[in-house]
Image (cartoon, rainbow, N blue to C red; front, side, top):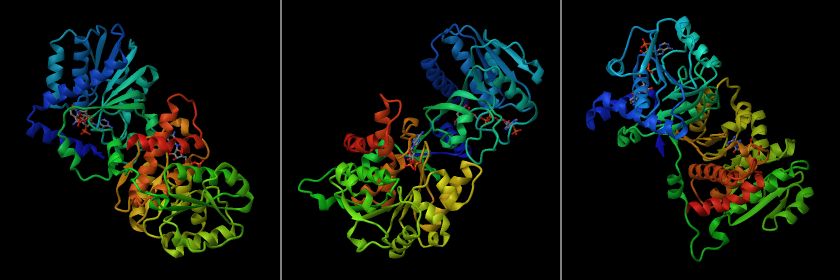
Length: 496
Ligand SMILES: NC(=O)C1=CN([C@@H]2O[C@H](COP(=O)(O)OP(=O)(O)OC[C@H]3O[C@@H](n4cnc5c(N)ncnc54)[C@H](OP(=O)(O)O)[C@@H]3O)[C@@H](O)[C@H]2O)[C@@H](O)CC1
Ligand SMILES: Nc1ncnc2c1ncn2[C@@H]1O[C@H](COP(=O)(O)OP(=O)(O)O)[C@@H](O)[C@H]1O
């Protein structure tokens, strides 16, 4: 897991590295600039392009000055630096780099007021005005200047973080910062890059290593961790010699209704492919032919007007919700399972029932997993204006109720009962199609049946689901939920 840092912690990592490597802070800045330029040159190899580098007077601006210098040395002849002189203060390393730049042949203009910014001739813009030192929203001259830069409508590369974008914490409801094409950031992605609001600030990001002390970073106390493939490989267990279906658990999936039987089929299909030893689908009578025809490996438990499951303890893991429908009987069924006090995976309509029966939320069995998308989450726990606030609620609720909350999105947030948030990096927009969440539920319940811990089942489920989608999307515009269900077996095999 990669520990993600706040800006304050990044500054500590910076200071630790300077003292312990040891390295002078100006040399660390030079290293950061080199790492930026190396990445930039991979994308932009036409050195005849005009590049405008906008530099504030803090360390972000200091990086910008070093970057301009390096670009000149790399054959970019048409580089022009705009020093944004809207603040009195300047950082010592900015001052050193300005001196170096003054001694070079790099063209430079000083912008003392917004109206000085005219006739910018640029094919590309490098934004190094404000970085992780941002401490309030842009206003006044800074806001006006950034508006002008955005109006130029050029491809913008931001250094470390787009000017005006908060690296962590609640984001304002309207964004008035730089709209970057790409942000090349240092050592770790910014926590807020994983929030959907970040798309207003940067279309994509790339992380470059600048040699900060990794041991120090990994040991920092953090609420946010980024899941890596290596973590998944450590958790996954291979199928054992002499094992049999009983070794890998029996999963029960309570799902489906007349018009949404497909959800039950998709979940069950995913559960099979993710390795449960036995899978039973509890579905209405009307779905039996479909189930028996399409998934002969799955057993059926007819559900018409059933308000409880006989002998739930015979299942190692139970999921409820995909395509379930909202009815008095389904509410009774959910209530009886909750009262039974064994952990559940709760999705889709079962979440919607919970939203209407807030009294049941308090009674959720410990170690249950809720898998809401944003709307289901807000129905359960109240409207949220921003994703940061939604994440804070998810973290608190997971801790208070001793459950795991899988808050789904492009980056899915797995919130543990310890109050930690694990960010899943796999998945892509080709997966934005109905039924995809049903498949995730099937994969998670399969891992639970195989006796992975609650948190590991959620983490594995999200990663495998997204990886299967990523592998499929290599040559497809869109991937369907059933394709992801089938592909999950391959994704697991590849990782073991
Ligand atoms: N370890 C690393 O990752 C490394 C990081 N490095 C680089 O350092 C960058 C961070 O540099 P930094 O700390 O000097 O802050 P930076 O963003 O330049 O701005 C500071 C100034 O902004 C001002 N200010 C704030 N908000 C404002 C607003 N809304 N409107 C107007 N002004 C505002 C604030 O003024 P104040 O409010 O304090 O008066 C302060 O003076 C980081 O992003 C990376 O590029 C690398 O060099 C090496 C290793
Ligand atoms: N753009 C995307 N990038 C990554 N994953 C995505 C994207 N769009 C959807 N998904 C994944 O697909 C699933 C959708 O879940 P959900 O909305 O519950 O679907 P449904 O109700 O149709 O089954 C989630 O796991 C989500 O993470």
